[in-house]
Amino acid sequence: MRRTLFIILLVAGTSWITAVTAWYSAHMNYGSIVALMAVESSFIPFPSEVVIPPAAYVAENPDSAVCVTDNYIVNVALIVLFGTIGALIGAIINYLLSMWLGRAIIYAFVDSKAGHLLMLSREKLEKAETYFNDHGKVSTFVGRLIPGIRQLISIPAGLSKMPFGQFLLYTFLGAGIWNTVLAVLGYVAHGQADLINEYSHELSVAILVLLGAVIIFYAVRWLVNRVKNNKA
Image 1 (cartoon, helix red, strand yellow):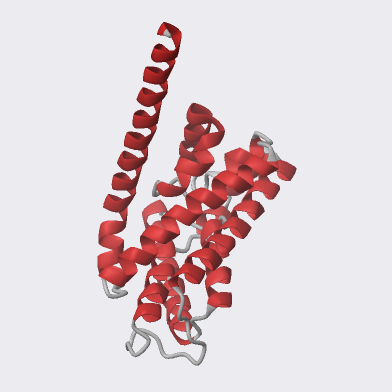
Image 2: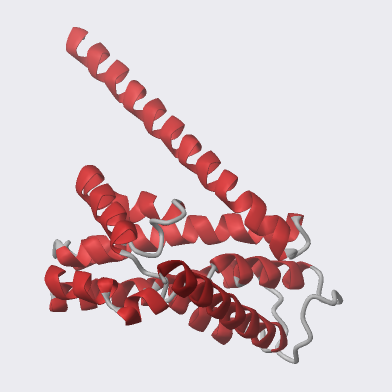
């Protein structure tokens, strides 16, 4: 019974994404980018890989057949900016709902049929909450780069009543980096969703490794400077 329900939900979810993607291809503009990225960043499952990369490719190749639209998208920087604004809107929705409703109601919703229809699960939410608890407030920044965590990391931030200003800053920075990567990937992969989906996970890992290397570099430099100052 559970397997049958899962298959039905999977097919329904795929059909819904396909329909929205087709609509987006015919109505690609900065407003639709904000709207779909807000959906992607909320508790509604929708992949950012089908929003930012095609738009970036169209911006760099306005004569391409990827999109038929009267609303021309010509600036990749604006695509990243509006996509990040949309992601921030969706994250704020999650944050506020979680803060106001509380942990018990949020988990009850996740366990409900409505939650399952939205492809939510207790396991996914617990994973996001564990990550937040283990890494603290900065997880709202790093978590935006991790598949499976990205869309839900704002929920534990709201449950813990993380300071709103810090939440906005970390979320905006994390979403901005991820959208920049998607824009570059969209141009390189010629807006092809299959290739983008295939390599987006590897890119997430590469970004995290790079961030880790940068953090280690500055930490080592800070320690070296501190030792030198103590000796002086």
